[in-house]
Image (cartoon, rainbow, N blue to C red; front, side, top):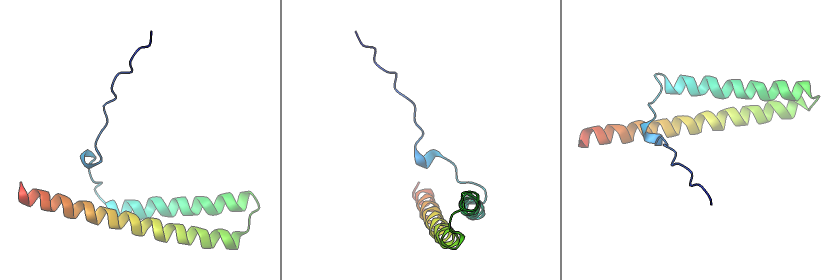
Length: 84
């Protein structure tokens, strides 16, 4: 006899509040991750030139994507607020 798992309450993505400073916070977060990538490359004896290129590409793409998604979400919330 098997027991059924209880349904897990999940938060919808739209119910998660937007941070107070979404653009600044995402820039700081992704920059720290890029620096962490450089530290790992340095500690493991990897090619730092390649690591710098990868880190810069990562930070640029990740920040751009985060900002794009925040702009979409804020525009959607503004449109929903005007409708409702």
